[in-house]
Length: 259
Image (cartoon, rainbow, N blue to C red; front, side, top):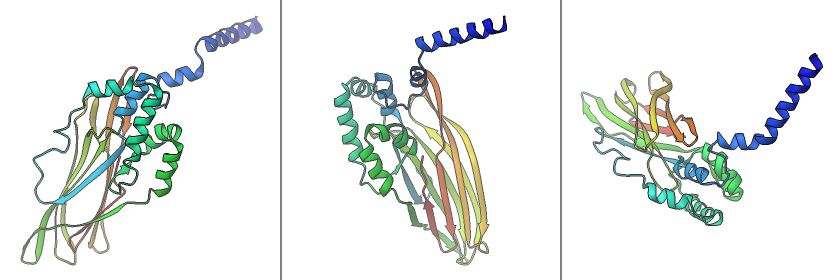
């Protein structure tokens, strides 16, 4: 009797596998797959392909980086319904135009999830030339009795291959120094979203500390954003990072921040 039950279960599982092969299930629930159906093309065109970072001193800008950009759904629809060869030409052209841009940080999920299979030549060109990005910025401030006070703003925001800003992750730091020590640091971190189906969850991880006799202050903070694919319903998390070092001589260093 037991052997008959085992045989019956085996036959059911075999029949199920014939009608629903594993690959079809994987594709249905993994929008990042490079399969060139319309849904996958739409996912690629709406995915954060790379990020840019804006670093400046002074008061918080009243103009949001992404507020003037709107996703044109008709353009996405048109591109997603191109035939495979035309769509590949479009993606290759858009990607190649960004390869030599030193100001962008490529999204690793985009590279591994899309580009590696579609265009391995471009993928390895980016991987082999993608060095650690370090930016040094001098923060201007107001000095009183030997103490300088300023606000430094760091904003990293993802963009699609079509150049649309999807969201932004911000860290505003109000701080003061006297040339030999950092006196105080008051950071504020938050996120904003601009594109449909995006949501800011909050801070995922935060590390901050003084070191080198308070000559330096280090802050590494990551956010948690989600994007919901409506067909099929599927939620993906993105964790942008800001890696910031402050110096008592007014320098600010940003290292490999991005999405």
